[in-house]
Amino acid sequence: MEIVPGRMIYLGYGRYWRSDEIVGLVPIEEGRGPGRRTEVYVATREDPVVASRSEQTILNAMAGVDEMSRSAEAVASVRELADELAELPAVLRRMLKREGSFDADAWVARLAALRRRPDETPRAQEDLFSDD
View 1 (tube, rainbow, N blue to C red):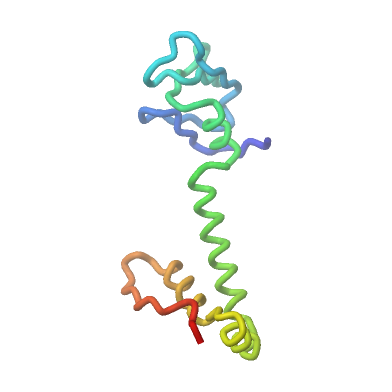
View 2: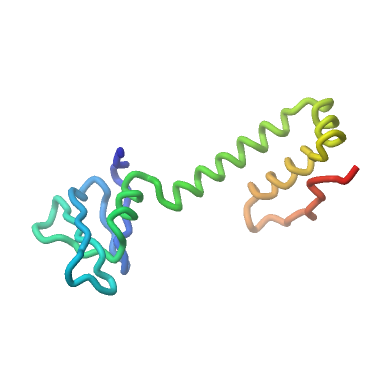
C-alpha cells in the first residue's frame, strides 16, 4: 500500500497528523475504551498519539482510500459517464430507447444535474426509463 505524502489524517477528537510523519500504528488491546483504539507513532514525537480510530481506518486514509477520495472518484466517474453518453450517435440513442427502454438523453440530463453546484436552480427530473 502506497502512502500519499502530505495528507492530513484524522485521528479522532479533532486531532490530525500528516501522513508522511506517521511511522507506526499499533491497535490498543489492553485498556482500550472510548477514544482509545490505536497508538499512532509519529516521527516528531517519542510517545505515541492515542487515536480513537482503528488502525485500518487510519491506514486507509493515509493511502487515500477514505471517503473524500472515494467521493472525488465518484464525481470523476459521473463526469466521464455523462460525457460518454452525450457522445453516443443519435441512431444508437434511438435504438437504446426503443429496444432497451433506456433513455440516454434523460440520463445525460440527470448526470448533468448531479454535476451542477447546489446553489444552481435544479431542473425537473425526467423519466429515465420509458415503457414504450
